[in-house]
Length: 157
Image (cartoon, rainbow, N blue to C red):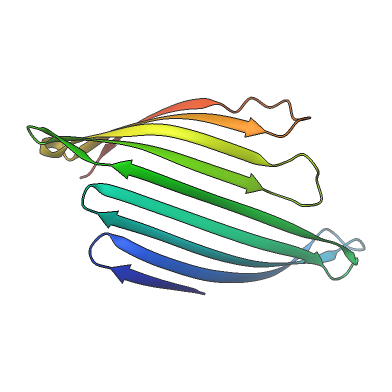
C-alpha cells in the first residue's frame, strides 16, 4: 500500500509499506521467507531549486527455519538548481548522496555513493542530455570498483 500527497505541480510526499511472503526451494527443502518493508520519500521544487530524499527499511524473517532476522536499510538525498542559459536551453547541476546497508548479517556490505551530475535541457527538441559521475565507497574487505560515468540522451515524443 502507498499514500502519495501531491503538493502543487512539482512536489510530492510519499509513504508506503509492503508485505511479501514467499516460498523458496524444492521439496523436501522448501522454506518460507517473509519481508516487511516501509518507505518514505519527498520531493520539493521551490523556484529553481529541487530537493528530494528517500529512506527504505526492510526486515526479512525465516519462519520455517527459525533463521536470524535480516534487516536492510537504504537512503538518499539530492539537490539541484535549474539555471536558464537562454535560447530555450537550461542547465541543472546537482549532487546526490546515497547509502545502502543490504544486510545487518554481513559485516562489510555497506555502500555509499557520491554522485555529481548535470542535465542540459534543449526545449526546442524536447531533449535532455544527462551526465552523472559516481564515486562508490565500500567498506574495507570488499574489492569491488563501482565508480562510473553515465551519459544519457532523453527525447520526449
